[in-house]
Image (cartoon, rainbow, N blue to C red; front, side, top):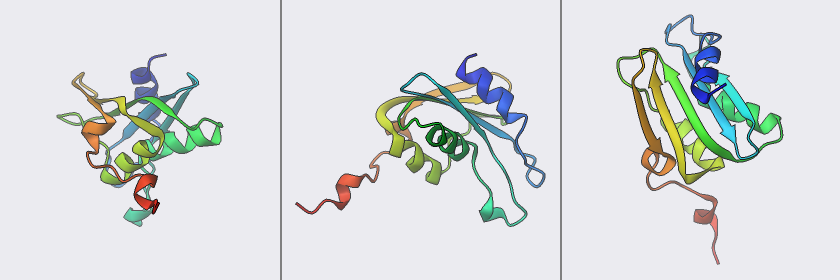
Length: 130
């Protein structure tokens, strides 16, 4: 199964009764395993979870810690990039050159890198005082 197929399948399981905007994400860890996530809304909007965050949580729960590739899909006119928080979450576990493919349900795709998504990323090195 490709990352796009995995993201497409998990998107159908999204819980989005308020926005009706279902998002699916699949990532391949450096071990080769595929981890998926979908958005899970809550009536208290800030309490929802993004698809990308769900996939990362599944990766960590499975014992993997590094992302090799990411795919995100939504039913939108143009490919939807991850929100700012998810960009930082992806950058926590992925090298700057990791490929991120953004897709629509009607076949449009945009390929970027983590560096393209989040230039000037905040890293642990910013907290070092040597």
